Length: 181
Image 1 (cartoon, rainbow, N blue to C red):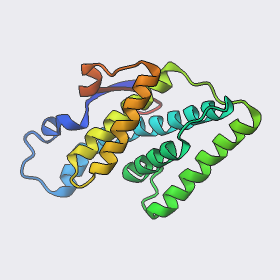
Image 2: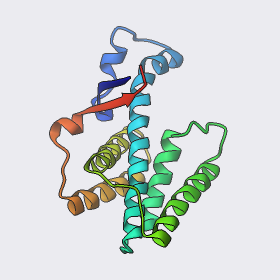
Image 3: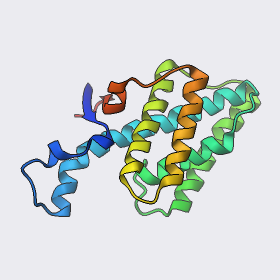
C-alpha cells in the first residue's frame, strides 16, 4: 500500500510535533519527532540511490564526472542519517560499505556501457534529498563544510538539469512510501 505523506522541511522546526509537550524528556522528544526523521531519512536514501544511478549513467556514457565528489556526498549523507541503520558501525565502516557499493555500480556501468534508467523523478529525489540534508545540517552547529558541499552539489545538478525546487518544495516534503503505514 502506498501512502503519500507531507511533513515540513527541517528548517521549519518541530513546534507542531512538540506543541503542548513542553517541557519533555529527550526520549519523549525523540518519540514525537521520530516519524518525521524517518521520512527525511527515506528521502535522503532516495537521494543516495539517485546519485548512484546518475554516476552510473555518466560512467556508462564515459562522461567526465566528479565521481569522488559524488561518493563523498553519499558518504556524508549515509553517515549523518545512518541510512541503513548501522548504529553499531563506525563512520569508516559505513563509508567503506558505501564506497564499495558506489564503485561497483560505476565500474560495471563503465565496463558494460549500461546503467539503470535515470528518470526525472530520480533527479527530483536527488535535489529534494540534498535540500533536506542541507536544511538539517543548518540546524546543527559546526557542519559548515558539509553544508557548503551539499549546496554546491545541488546547485551544479540544478544547473545541469535546468531544474529548481519551488518554494513549496523547500518548505514541505511530500513523499510516497510504498508499504509504510
